[in-house]
Image (cartoon, rainbow, N blue to C red):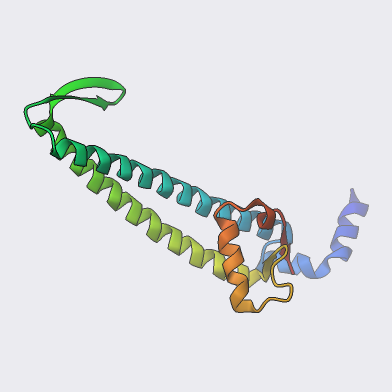
Length: 161
């Protein structure tokens, strides 16, 4: 065990001191990938909620053309309940507004996470595989945003230098 400890210590004497001031390359990569995954999950949730809003809009538009005293059924917590259109329509519009507010919140969180990712990349000089090869720095930001949306080719490898 002592031989391992001394070889590790002599092998990375600078990183031993660097460990106190900063994380190892593996920790940097793991943190970066975790942050990207968080951003991807936020984008996925926002897309899911956008689909919910579209469904709500479709139903609201349909119900506006119907007699307010007409029977309609609504699924609440897995239970199908019978109501009238005039009872359901305000609830649907309220739900739609709440979903819109949640989407706005998620989008602002995604922007914040994007800024954090950019700062983290710059701080630790992180490059994605295939990025920066013959590209200008300003152009290299666009492929990284595409890969954060779920591209698997660029997201497969992360380089830290």
